[in-house]
Image (tube, rainbow, N blue to C red):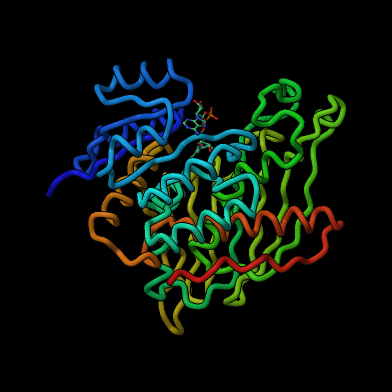
Length: 360
Ligand SMILES: NC(=O)c1ccc[n+]([C@@H]2O[C@H](COP(=O)([O-])OP(=O)(O)OC[C@H]3O[C@@H](n4cnc5c(N)ncnc54)[C@H](O)[C@@H]3O)[C@@H](O)[C@H]2O)c1
């Protein structure tokens, strides 16, 4: 099988990491890179031995047979520079992977998903947290009915920190003065994992806040997001996320517990461990917890695993609704984020998120 031709657009830390993943993946052939910062593009291009471009339009014109354009452009709230290049690549008929969040503006995210559907190309998002061995095992256990009816999902995804290590309000243009930076830039990860495991969310209630040391420094960042959810299947969910307000505790930097009527599972520290506690059967012995240790500790492995899964899906020409980590999945998580922001702004009122469009 011929390797799929890939170009990466946006070459800061994350774009460069994507390039390294493609160069190590036998399913991919990295043929070009692009950054509007010309020196950066040229340096990465010559380091990796691939063609370098400074404008996406030039890249798309000169590389007409790309199988995938990977867009890792970032910007304000880590998403303001995504929409224009994504739309341009879609209009050129290319499959696109975009980093999360789809955008820092919900109307742009909706437009990107609609444009890909209309043009008949794949739009995928880097929902890399789906692609850890424990998350894959969790999906399989839920899918084969091992947990029975799902009743609850409790998730915590947070950066370790505290008052001693706080360095003052952000001076980075991507986040400085933006109260919803953490919500918009980050919540796609935990909310998409919760949806991946438990299905669509129908109601959202949220309280956002910030600790005393941020308040005293005049830091506007709403660094703590506490969100209560109801899933369409009837389960309820809780997500706690924060950006360095307290040290990491139980479960490492992210953990999730999903409880069902036949069993409960928990993932600890993202890639590390999954435990299954089966329910006791009538007259049976006391059930023994099954522990699955992946042997991994570094979440970085999720990047290569995620990009490989997309290459497999493109190669297999899966129907759009079967694309793993799709733009539509990322849009649904962003709709929940917007619902949480609205709920916070209304003092914790219940909000029904806008439905993400059904995939054709
Ligand atoms: N999935 C994950 O686990 C994860 C982790 C961290 C960051 N991210 C995401 O990765 C993305 C990139 O983050 P970063 O910190 O590397 O980005 P950044 O904002 O530091 O840099 C973006 C780069 O894109 C270039 N660029 C901007 N617009 C462009 C355009 N139209 N054409 C070509 N180049 C353009 C800029 O010159 C810059 O070099 C963000 O969206 C962020 O949310 C994802």
